[in-house]
Image 1 (cartoon, one colour):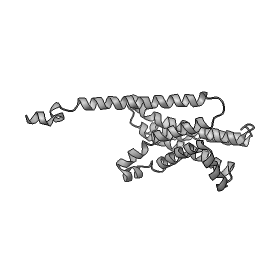
Image 2 (image 1 turned 90 degrees about the horizontal axis):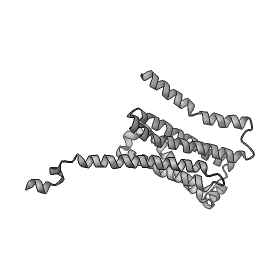
Image 3 (image 1 turned 60 degrees about the horizontal axis):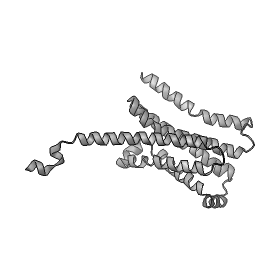
Image 4 (image 1 turned 180 degrees about the vertical axis):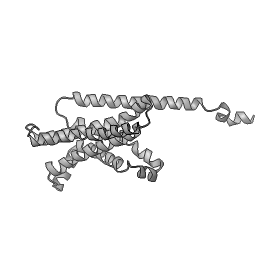
Length: 213
């Protein structure tokens, strides 16, 4: 059973590299279309967003299936979101702007949608470098609070995505629907747990004055 789980994890790691290999293949065979730069930006950004959404979907899947091993996959998919987001940023800095920092600074100041992309990336970067067990132990309770910022990253990434689009909105609307469903599921679970917690509080403890009487 343990070997099967390890094999599944190894297979997942390998499959998550396929989008990158696909991009490399299209670069090598000149299949990126007439606007290669834009195609690179969009494809790497899309995969960063997809892995971020998959990461957010792990908790609902774990809740439904009761499979506690899903936690490791949440970390894994989160790291792939960080990986593809880093490539997305690297293409912008190295290929698009050729590390011309003055032009990059002007571009950031003049393009509001880049601000939201920057916010999303800073959060994903922070979550990526603190995803290890050692960081979790070091940060204690603060670790969980920090990693709740993934929702803010998802919101900023959606705004960044919508704002720079000039055409078909079907795909971003699909991502938006998914994030509403995922957040809605979490809200329902939170409300249910809160109700159960209140029902489990003994009446005597809830009203100490009454008990003393």
